[in-house]
Image (spheres, rainbow, N blue to C red):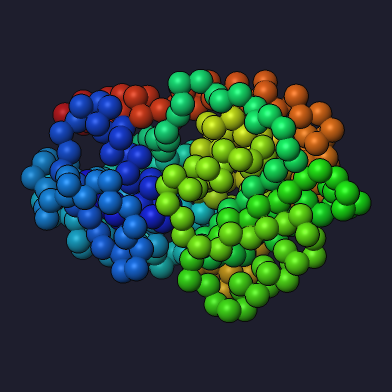
Length: 348
């Protein structure tokens, strides 16, 4: 397995969680880390790293943008499978040839699967992204203000993550300024001064908003998540959205744009999907976005949802129970490991 196994970025966490699925299925695995300068804060798999693998199949985890580079690095004789993350429904025509470097593709969501099937001819299989799941959804947090959390990485492109949308929905839902609510914005990444300044200006509009702008440990991030009641992602697109899935697994109400990979696990039964309208990706907003489209979330609808949760917090519990059951069936390490074992058996 080849990936950013020591990095704290989303692709690194996705790869580590996939390792947990391989381990759950007792599949012998050698781990090859791809260094990412300045972003190697997760050392849990360091003792298992090797310089190269020796198995009949190499599984590489990366974004679609990196497929060409990873093909040159990992594809050396054995069967080569790419586990692909991508946030748009299309890729530029000029990228299509680079998919030929791999023998097959695994997709973490139907959104990514459909993209892969539309742009290349190799076999594509749906292998849901594994996530950590408690045995049962935790009980609702008791006492204190209704605490809303949104998070993003500046390096994942602010236009796609759209943290401004979460601010606007929060302000529209609680305009009086006297409601017992808080908004916590967890940010990180190497953004320009202008991007950070823009987020700071928005947060300064309401004393109930707080920005945490730094990389934190796994335990500290877990504590931030534990203290919240609602997780908001008014993204314009997501290939999967680990944040939404983890929040749902941990018993939080998830309010998210109903577009992209979140559609596999966030429904009216499991959370609070937000309406959107389709818009073109503007030049410069995302690499490979030329001629593609994504979602513009309905801020008024998101605000109405937040207000309804504030007025009726008991509405969270049944959705969380349904969401946990769905994730257990599809995204637990055991379920994903069984899916991988089945695919390996089918491939001989």
